[in-house]
Amino acid sequence: MPITPATATNSPSSGTAEPILLELVDEDGVTIGTAEKLAAHQPPGLLHRAFSVFLFDERGRLLLQQRALGKYHSPGVWSNTCCGHPYPGEAPFAAAARRTFEELGVSPSLLAEAGTVRYNHPDPDSGLVEQEYNHLFVGMVQSPLRPDPEEVASTVFVTPDELAERHAKDTYSAWFMTVLDAVRPAVRELTGPSAGW
Image 1 (cartoon, helix red, strand yellow):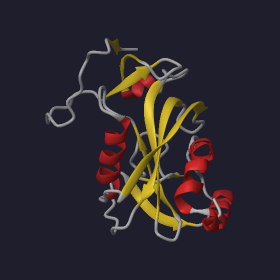
Image 2 (tube, helix red, strand yellow):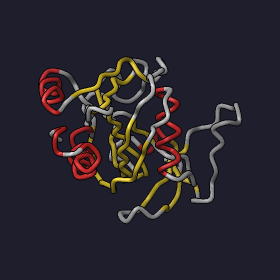
Image 3 (tube, one colour):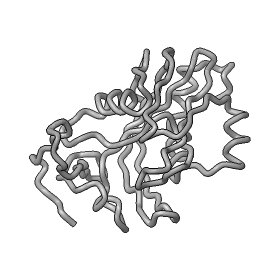
Image 4 (tube, helix red, strand yellow):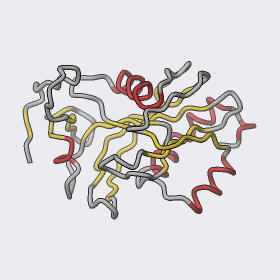
């Protein structure tokens, strides 16, 4: 698998079809190099930096997205508000804000760091593996959504009870419950006890 030194750069705005590079990390989250995105997800997977965003409305409901059917990884499944990978050298906070706008057409009115979680989740449908050191973020969304159909098939705001009902009947990303459980303390602090998270 192609791995390059940590000093390699990625130019997402250059207009060329350059490979998308992910930042490889050690178990402590220290950058050790880069790898091409798809190569990093081939079994057994290469540990890389990622982020997950959980945005809530003023009623304390969580914004979920259904991933577009055309996505190479986990198409059509439901997941948290937004998730992805920083470009090499890009701060996770900046990446989280950038991708939330790119996917959902909205900038969070509040976005706060909420810790990290490390996991290894094989995806049985695609055969890909999520070996991720994931930076978690919680925040608020107060503007109308304008989802990019290339990224997002559908969106919905849910209460905890509604999420439990939907989770029992719909397919969710392999990492969803892991990141949700990890972020719950920050969610409770953000939404307050009445929201039920």
